[in-house]
Image 1 (tube, rainbow, N blue to C red):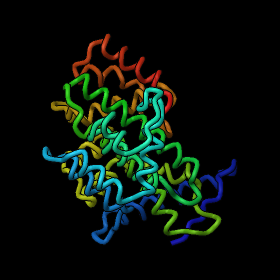
Image 2 (image 1 turned 60 degrees about the vertical axis):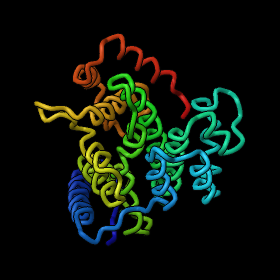
Image 3 (image 1 turned 180 degrees about the vertical axis):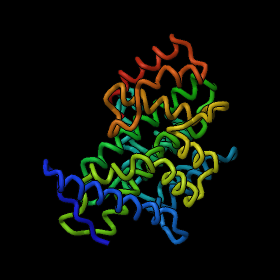
Length: 290
């Protein structure tokens, strides 16, 4: 399929044509993502192996290090991320073994998944700038989701990964458009986002299921904009939603997808006190470089 993504301009007829185009594109994408034969963007095999291994109680530092070493490019990317102030505390990390020793198996595994997603998923030809913003937003949300989860339940299992992948559906939409149309007139990212905004959560859930991630991760990705049905709340989905709102509050948001007005409501649903919420806001303010 080919798309004519010319700008709308001020011509009412042109605007109507573009609105019709966006509607048609959205319909095409809905069919694509619901099709049985849909193939999602692929994560490196070693990343999926790591996710499984890192959740085993018997996983050792050596087994994790050996697995990470299988992909030298990703391993180098992990070390670059680990050298950021968020993780290194100003002390250089020179090897995977040192990173594991200082950060722990789980944290290094999280960073490896971040590197894999940034290198293989948050990339779409023609949409480099918004994909870079999406990657930064996702990394920020992942870190804040981990902190919110710890403040509410005391545990952060899957919180980082859910935050990292909460908008993977938006990336998949950009990739699908790029793969389908390589002409110079491909849609603008604003048009792509109009199609992704209302659907990226369920698209992301579908992708997580196809990647065979734990079922709760897929569920949380699908619920991150609607963590409550009015009677019950999914704590981890609400933690991701709150992290998303805190990202928006601190100018780390993406396409204004999260509404900061909901911050207080989500905090209340999670049982956070005003003091705890203020502490999380301060943490978000200082989390300047992920």
